[in-house]
Image (cartoon, rainbow, N blue to C red; front, side, top):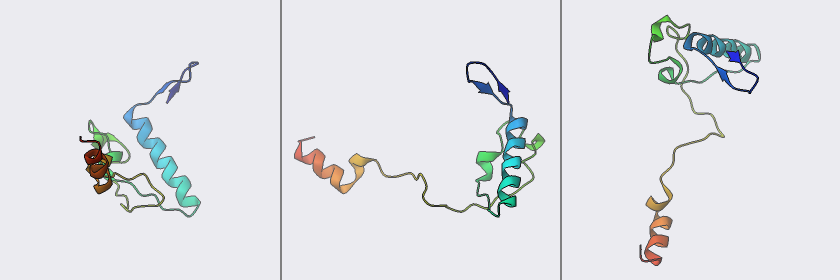
Length: 87
């Protein structure tokens, strides 16, 4: 990654892949497993030329976590609130 005085950096997919593998090594040394979705780790362009392409990662949910949820207006409570306002 190239750092700038303004606190902004830029990275290419090869450097980002190497950084991720370094992270994996650090986690392994600490006795922790790394969970990742392969399609999110491997870049969409030139993916096979990166260091993360020929590896597999355990896909498991770790909690606490940020999870997708139903939009508030689609829940039963949300529908009740909308109905009470005539919406």
